[in-house]
Image (tube, rainbow, N blue to C red; front, side):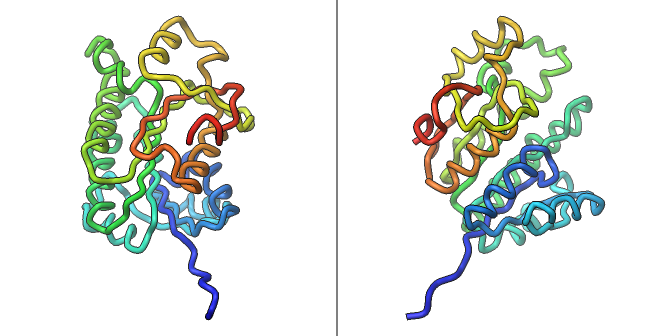
Length: 232
């Protein structure tokens, strides 16, 4: 019998983001065929240096059907895009509306596995922040997107890292619930509330490689427990 050499394919939305650029080579090394979606042609070269293939698409403007075409035949989707804050209209358009279209597209294309990169306070900020806060549109968009994902049939994992840093991955984290995370971070930023972007990339690879975090929200900081033990 011929050996099956078919690779599983994962599509990363927001392929030029810092986390995506760290996650792509880890997934490639694990045997995934990675398609990284970018909207700027100038980012193609950097994305391809990770071992991923680049796909040009502006998810802010793309229809569900256009996104589904890219998802066809994929095993998993990672949503790591974001408007970057500062513009409430774009924040809603990318972090909520485009995110929802990718979920609908995944279901339409028959993709079951979906990993959302959110943030540690997404379940609580929308209830505690003053709506006049400049951060509120982002908190609302992420909260609504996460809530929508929980209501789908997708095999999702929602990742909620703390304050992102450029530190190298330790491979060790501290998993926390939303309330404890909110209480900790409200006391002010410190090393205990930070999460290395590369640790986020390691977590993405872990949950995709193992199926861990099935239909779970995983809030985490850098910590002392190996990722494989912390998320099962």
